[in-house]
Figure 1 (cartoon, rainbow, N blue to C red):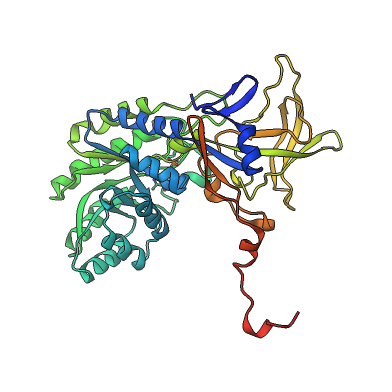
Figure 2: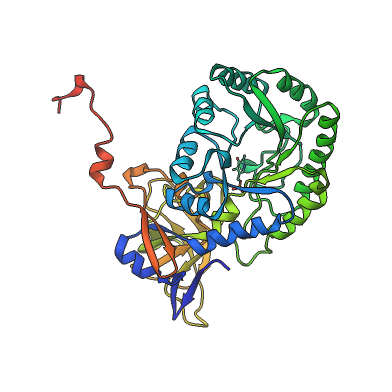
Length: 425
Ligand SMILES: *Cc1c(COP(=O)(O)O)cnc(C)c1O
């Protein structure tokens, strides 16, 4: 249930017809459903009911200010991975004590920013980072609350570019070395150890890797406590997958994930944090695009869209699948036609999908990419001087542009000509 449904033969976002938005903002654009975002947050919140917990939305999935404001208003925490994200979270209204700072390469400047602005905890990922964070905190006369991200060496069985919990990945410290790393943390004057962090990857479609990882975390909790450390918070990361293909078997539900958390870690009397991103935002957004041309090729037809890899890079970057459907509902029994669906960018990689069967569409028709709310707009670029496309938020029968399309002048005038080239053309 994601609030993008056909009504009277026209695709709607909640109570708003997609063509109405297209008319107001032009194509292509992203549109997000408030009700879906809220629903997904609540599913996680309810799944952990009975445990002391905080859902910390991983804002790298979709960091628009309006989306963040909505999440903050629901009571969510937030997981940030850069100083920029930290500032965005603060600007959207998250108090410091609901902001968690993750990431392998935090700089001194980012640490200072978060310490001064208020932070729930840093999830530190290496010994050198610990030493630097302690120095920065001591310099400010502060103590930084930390968990250490451990790498449990489990196979998340997901795409290699988004697996993070194997020993060959750059993330966290090997779980086998935890005791010495925690001992170092305890000796550093600017740090207060409060817990353990683990995040094994993204788009997980089975609970089994979580189970392996969380059992290791449970054991580590006991070991570290026996060593004299305070372990009162467990950050379990994010990564639960979403059904990108409606025809495929669905990944586990938040409620099943919650039951697993309770079963593996519930007895430890720890506060539980989780950091879902994709599952909250992914199916809460679609990308709407217009067909520019239908071009007949050798043995295939190309659907050339006005959206491209710079707007939605997941297919080019991960070979990701997005369901694509016409905005005007085809009549029942319409025969499907195979298309290669591509954008106008000058790269063969600018191909969303090949040989995709869908109802026939003509130039001027609108199509919608499902599951585009996470890792869509945030990964966009202006390659080929294609302006970042607008983002729109729907709430029941209302919609608002939450990021406008920049003008070409705005894009061009961001560049500056050095003095020695002035007047040369
Ligand atoms: C990316 C990331 C997440 C969110 O992952 P999803 O697959 O979007 O749920 C959570 N925690 C950390 C540390 C991350 O890097």
